Image (cartoon, rainbow, N blue to C red; front, side):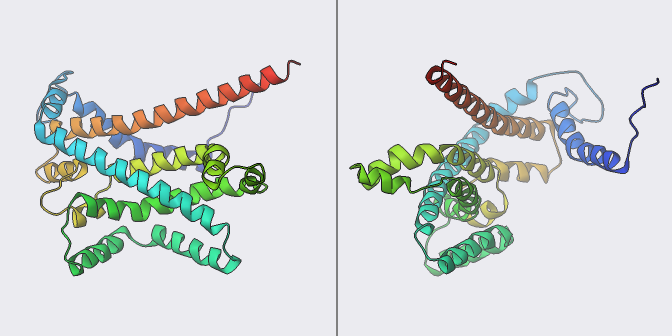
Length: 273
């Protein structure tokens, strides 16, 4: 009996086309970052010259540190606000929770440029200066929306009033939160932190409006260099930029695997069968 060959269907063809459309340009950027030909018209051999030139630039290093600092601050503030909002919403009425949910979705659905322009007008109205903290404020607005949804989904799976049970056993509210609820929310907190850091680290729209003239992030630098034509330096910076994001994802995956492995070993020790 002959085995039937798998037949290609329209969904398979569309899936392959979409994957090619998404990943071939990224692959081209990666390849050109190692291309020794400065014109990028032909393959001139493999080289690390463009990485050394880009990473050796003081401006690139300063912009990278600025982007990392803004992303780190935005992540911490957004996650703290999200945890507070989720736990506070659990004690609100049904109508108040729906309104809070609507505001959360609104921050995700509104175009980022609209939020950035509105925040810019508010900052100008208050007479404040544009800079690093105004960029952080803009990033927190949309990062906290995604973090809230992730943490809220995890919080909804926690059946029972663990904080009240801890209080009955003599724990203070802070101790009940740090020793009972926070460990249960830790996977969602880790995921929301990774999402917030990634979204903030590579944001362009809000940063363009809110950075001012004295604050420059790495995505803004790449955008400015790309306007003069895509050069090997731009490709090298973009690949390094992508490597940071992939490293953060790898660290999160490793931490998740280690946590799951430790939990499985703990269960096995408790149940010798």
